[in-house]
Image 1 (cartoon, rainbow, N blue to C red):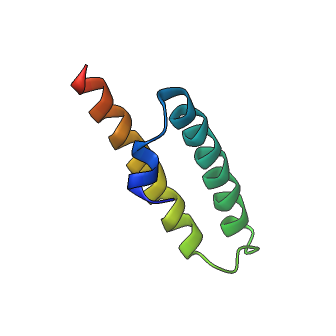
Image 2: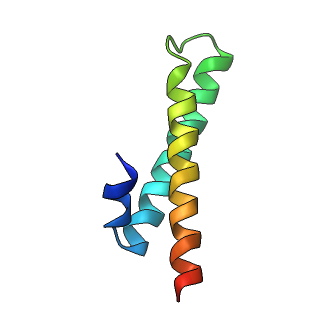
Length: 64
């Protein structure tokens, strides 16, 4: 999902998406530790998505 698409989402949708991404990251970290994850790039993508969501939440909070 691109940043433009994230900007259109409401606060509660961003919070749910953030929780989902954090859960996915935790799952990836367990898989990496067990050598089950083939593409470690997914971890990087998930971390980037979490950072973008947190940035948008902060921007919305400061605009108010």
